[in-house]
Length: 157
Image 1 (cartoon, rainbow, N blue to C red):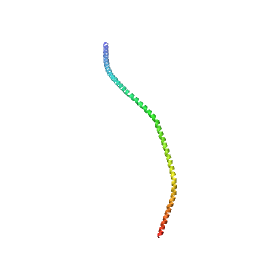
Image 2: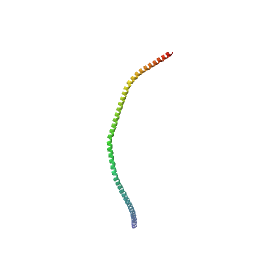
Image 3: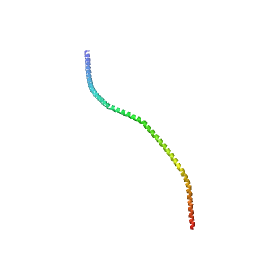
Image 4: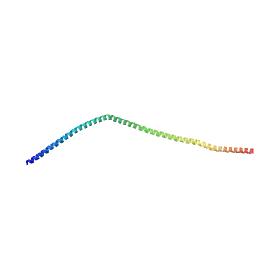
């Protein structure tokens, strides 16, 4: 039985030694991992610090630009608000002017029609009269010509 206990003790000792070796390897790997992680964290910290610095620089330059953009937008808004009533007034003025011109054109058309009618009535009357008188004179002249021509023919014959 002593031998069995010695064998079990040797196996336990071998297992313990193996456990110690595996633990040392794990600790060595963990140490390497932590060293590597520490250097990576240092690099990350340096990169984050540099990015924070650059963001600060960008912020320093961007804030005044954004303030200027906000001020310009506010001024443009004020200008457009001031222009809206003026543009509306211009539209109304143009519309009123067009109405005045339309009324003036209607008045001119009525005056033209009145003048044409005023001139045409006497002209038509004169024309009718002239046509009658001129026609009578023309007929009279042709009758006189015929008579004269008949007298000439008869006088020579």
